[in-house]
Length: 460
Image 1 (cartoon, one colour):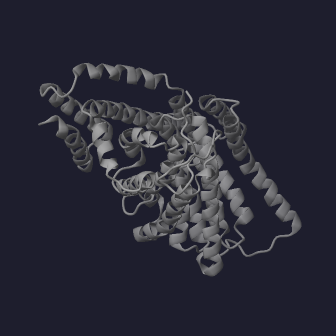
Image 2 (tube, helix red, strand yellow):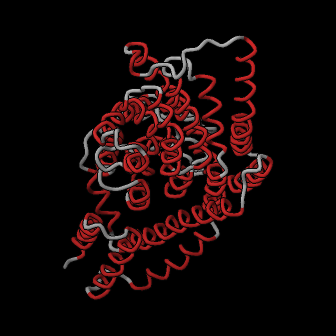
Image 3 (tube, helix red, strand yellow):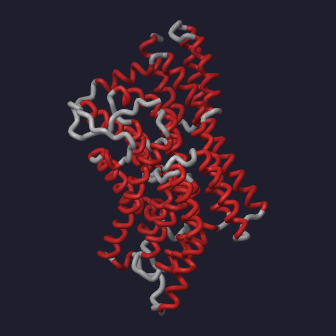
């Protein structure tokens, strides 16, 4: 086997192994080990190159960005296990449930808050499914609208800071985590707004799809009481989220320090409401530990794979593939987003982030593309991977907690309009990159693209 075909063969072998259903982290390491041995045997790979793996492992354990992952995940798990999300939904349900589509609005708002705090799509979708679906079915909601709202609200964990997805993207693209948080905030809010606008237009045109949960009219005192209850139930979690976000956004704390403050405040909030038992604390710690361990093993396997792949000059092969694309940056962006959208039918976010992004990041950087903007753009694109029929993990999560009266086809059809809105947001971000806030935005002249892209960040 010649050196020119080792890298393509390595990539093809990984695809076959993943499609066969083997565990991703161990598949990455196994393929890298086999092809490093082949490369050494054929004198196409320097064995001393593997010594860099020890430095990569050391860098992982000393990475401040990755330290924020267990803290933010643990904060979300406590919020979920202590039933604070349930309280928030029930209070907002009583407040807005009497309006047409009110429960769907509530699901999106609670989903945005819950997603931002948990940072984990599966946890958000399952929690929303258990909390919201019974109320929506009792109110007579259309099954497609109900399921679509739940999966859309839950998958906001992908782009809503402080999200562990954004942490992974910042790490893989080698950009500042604080800057990618700042850049993602406005697109995330616009995505929430597009969901709410879609629900409004749908229920305005077809009111029977989302009838009011209750038709009785309230007097002034009852309305004031509902607003007070909503403030008591939803105020502390929202205030906690806003405080953590603002402290990170304005540089008062690092992301890991913000996560530590968030965990402490969530524990205090759960104790104040007398919802935190030893069993619930154990469950939260176990769930956070399992998730973080999975991410860590994936990172180790992907680091080994990309190290061997680069040692076999795989990065040169990838560059040659993209050199033949027309239209320069425009062609690169279109091809990249289409490829990731299609890969998301078969791979989940972490697999794409750990395998594909390290391969394309150097090419994007040499083309002068701002990496913060690219990270937010890919975060929105990768959000669709959780909602792709028929393999989206969010669809499976919702299927596991919904009653049998809801068909699987209803879940799939309900997700399609929200996937379309996510793709629309991808197009908007490409056409208007200034929506991604960047403290050092400067327009640059690009000869082969018609839009103005933020300047590349060369600061240390």
